[in-house]
Amino acid sequence: MQRALENAMADLVLGDEVDPTDERAVDAWLERNAVPEEDRRAILEQGVERLSVYRSLVRGNIRRAIADVAPRTVARLGELFDEYLGKFLRERAPRTHYLRDVTVEWLDFSEPLWCADERVPDYLADLARHECTRIEIGARESKDRDREPGELSLDRGVELVPAARVVRYRYAVHQLSDEQSDRTAPQKRGTTLFVYRSPEHEVRYLELSPLAALVLEALADGATLGSAIKDACAQQGVEIDDAVLSGTATVLADLAARGALLGSAAPAT
Image (cartoon, rainbow, N blue to C red; front, top):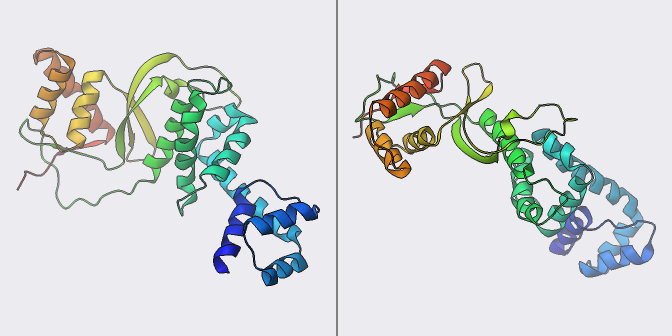
């Protein structure tokens, strides 16, 4: 009995809208969810209109949560946003308990469909991921340090701030205006960014070369500085020379000045 009521409420909120004034539609909704007769009478006595208000509240909260995280994506989708939101709610529905995570679930569902939809700009998935990343990095917890990091050494790893990651896009979406009314298309250019939260708690971006991105990804995974440089050069097919070492040192010094790189990691035990 309880399961039937739960299914009926989920269907009411996430499925196609039920017109409370249409007796056939209401009966069909109760029937397909196998709601027992006693509960059917109770629902009808209270009025389906009141349940429809609940549907509007829940869907409105989800809609606002996505619009808060990815406002420019939602603005550029226009009317298509509600279409894809409806498909997401009907066919998958949120599985997270946290509204801030709903946007990523909606995007994971929608992105493959956008690829086949000529109405959706090709760059929009990158823009949506970019907006989600800003919220993710901004919300990530800081980590208390039990030691002061030392100076960098080739035989040690580095300690980056926890609120940081390397992201890759096909379009330079980070250069788009923050204005929701803007519809300028981004440049189609492979772009790699180091995204981090500054000591002032602002999410900031540093565009990286392919080599620097590989080095930082390896360092984030716990590699030593020497092995990170060696493996990155091997992947890029370049020699480790003074230019590579100087360029790497410049990037790391820049990150240290920004407060994103704290120093060397603790030696392995």
